[in-house]
Length: 273
Image 1 (cartoon, rainbow, N blue to C red):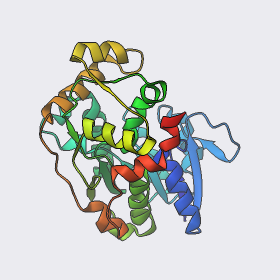
Image 2 (cartoon, one colour):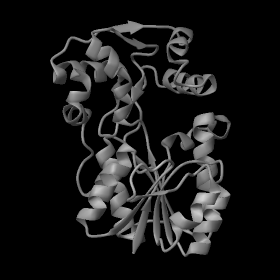
Image 3 (cartoon, one colour):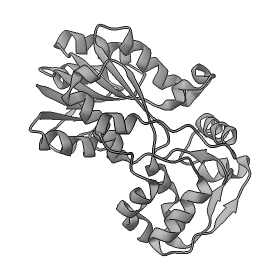
Image 4 (spheres, rainbow, N blue to C red):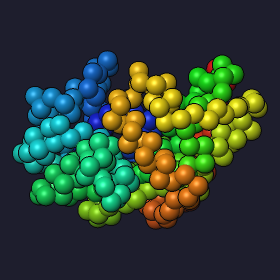
């Protein structure tokens, strides 16, 4: 059995690769621009890279890229792939998901997979704890963290829990063929996450309330306008409102999801410089 792990440089993929190898499973790493001869070129935006990447593969851990998903599915079926585990998003469960630029692309990939002959497992994590790395420069430099909705709730999940959940369904495909909504163990506001980082790093961290437009202006270099608006709408909808927590991580891994404090301790050097 050969498992293709796409997006090999990503945090989830790196954790998953280690776990698969510890199980003695054969792994093929795929990346858009491989800089290592051990990594094959698998650019989800370029169908010409699909045949070589998928040849002889039985299972795939797939990042959600919608631009050529129909071509990817067709090539996966031709290559004899049996099981695809998709890193999707819980945003697809929102009532307006189809209209959202964030959720819509994930939905397109889900639909293409579930309409095919492939066994498809949909992992739908909520907010990644790793999103807090966006605050790292401010915290390291002593600048305040700009927050448009400091009391907005998310359910931050450790990338290691997502990787272990993916391992569970890749190692036992009978657990696949369905969707799992993955969350961390707590609904936390951004302000509570900032307080946790301050405690763990031993650094004072201040917050600066900003308007939607001010935040968009600060992030314009990194986040296109339409994606920024979708994020802001989501945060605003959860402002002061706890989000739902699931038990899917426990169901798949056999242990509770790691708390945000654990993630902060694991990444403390990213915030200390």
